[in-house]
Length: 214
Ligand code: AP5
Image (cartoon, rainbow, N blue to C red; front, side, top):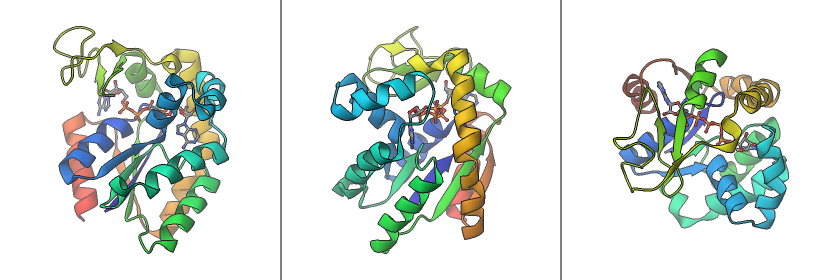
C-alpha cells in the first residue's frame, strides 16, 4: 500500500501518518523529519535547507527530490509506505509518479487532511515534538504525562523553530501557492479522498482507516 498525506501545516498529517504506518506496518516517510535531521546533522542538504525552513518557505525541489529518492530506494519502503509532507509541488508530484510507475507501484490513495488557518495556528502554537523519537504532542489536546518529557522514549520535548506565528503564516501561504494545485492533480487521477481534520484525532484516524480500506 502506498499512501500520500496532503494538507496544510498543522492539519495533523504527521500524527495520522505515523498512526497509519504503525497500524499497517508501513514505512513512514516524512520529508520534514528528513530535512530537520539533515539540519541537525549539519549535512550539505541541511545547510541548504535550513534558511528556507526557518522562514517558512519550501526547500527547492531538486534538494527534496534527492532526499526522498534515497529513502524510496531503501528496502524499508519496499513493503509499502506513507508519504507525509511530500509531494508539495507539481514538479515533485510528477517526478514521484515517474519513479513509482517505472516500478509498477503507483500511489493507491491521496488523503487530504483539511483544516482552517485559525485552528492550524492554535495547534502549532501548542505543539511539542520529541527530539529523540519525533513523537508529537499538544499542550492542551494531547499533553505528555510529564511536562516536557516524551511518554514513549523519555526524550526532551521542544518547540519547532518554524512554529512561531509569523512563520506559520508564511508556511500556510507557501501551501496555498504551491501545494493546493496538487488537489486537482490527484482528483483528476481519481485517487484523492478528503478528510475533515478538525475532528478529534481518533475520529480522524477512523476516517483515514475507512479511506484506505475502501
Ligand atoms: P513539515 O515538517 O512537513 O511541516 P508541515 O507540512 O508544515 O506540517 P507539520 O509537521 O507542521 O504539521 P502536520 O500536519 O504534520 O501536523 P501534526 O500532526 O504535527 O515541513 C517543515 C518544513 O520543511 C516546510 O515548511 C519546508 O520548509 C520543508 N519541507 C518539508 N517537506 C518539503 C517538501 N516536500 N518540499 C519542500 N519543502 C519541504 O499536528 C500539529 C499539532 O496539532 C500537534 O501538536 C498535534 O498534537 C495536534 N493535532 C494533530 N491532530 C489533531 C486533531 N485532530 N485535533 C487536535 N489537535 C491535533
